[in-house]
Image 1 (cartoon, one colour):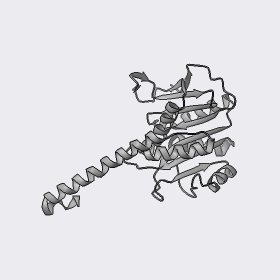
Image 2: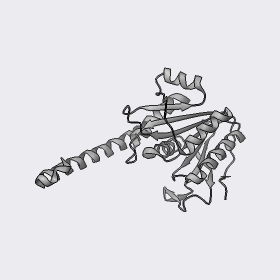
Image 3: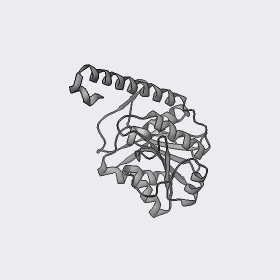
Image 4: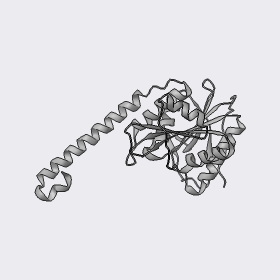
Length: 241
């Protein structure tokens, strides 16, 4: 079955901004958009389905939910498409086209995709990539993010950016430097702080920052224990040192 959007409530929006978040490096896209809709008073307005999706349900607050969902805020005039599963490569292009068609049907003028990236050039950096050069240059001049001269981004976000360049539809990617090895709430917080400045909507990321500190402390303690074990094991434990 093709990728299909099923609406469960009316989206009474006028030229809304479309925000997109998919799993990727550090799961930044999923974590950031999930946090944003939870704290921003969004209501679930539908979901996305396909036979190619993994057969699972996400569970939140004791409730099973489709893993790819659509949220809407009339006050913010925003629609959010968030996924908690990795979209198979076979349907990534179709997913991007479906989102673009959905945005056009709502008379939206812009899609912003939030995600992670691992360039390992600057810790805590946020990179901005888009097909509207004047907009991107303006945001970079305001020091909201950095530019990427050469590189590639894949998946749904990559396809959306390519489609935007071909069709002229405004697509902007907000990509936070993130760890490829674990969930990175700090990177999600950095992405949301940049997004807040771009869309001029306050976003309190204190809980994400707290979660990041807990994870960092856990990693530090694990490293200390590993080194201690290495010293106890003698010369053969050099790999821990």
